[in-house]
Length: 203
Image 1 (cartoon, rainbow, N blue to C red):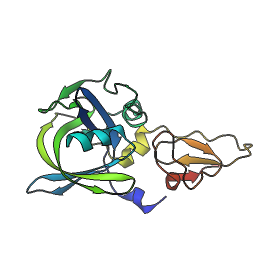
Image 2 (image 1 turned 90 degrees about the vertical axis):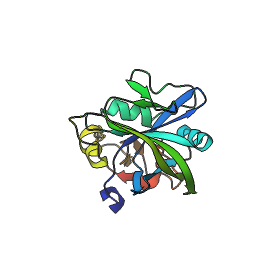
Image 3 (image 1 turned 60 degrees about the vertical axis):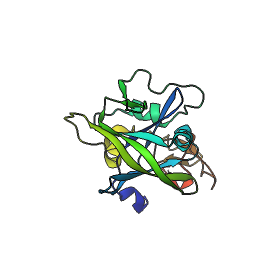
Image 4 (image 1 turned 30 degrees about the vertical axis):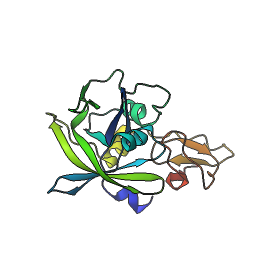
């Protein structure tokens, strides 16, 4: 496993709004950059619908997930697209930020409403540098959900196929998706949209 996977990350639901449409995705790339003024960076894959909404509106919100989070929530917000009219928030308890962005109220430590100050093109992703416009802290008996905790306790562990399988099985270390045979160099995981670099041979 790459040393990058040893770096400490959290998991977050990133929300955005375009007119009357709310959408969200799961990311692990929120980081405080400065304390005075309070600024954070949020990095999002350009293929995500939420990315396009942030580019258009110039604002977003981040819900900080806690360890009560179940895989179904990660799967709902992180492994399907909202472009086709799917309401990812359906069935979840939510509220709205001051500017009207829908955010989760369950399974999280709270949320921050962010205003985009600038952006950096990172190739496959855009890093948005944001000021904190507002924040709400929930009372939670749980700890923040780290990337390591997610892999160890939340994400279902892949089930190895029988040893008699002729083709090698390569498993995505991000979401657990299994691919028969070595993925091509330009292969993209159909669930989490990560590339070949995040697959390892399991059989």
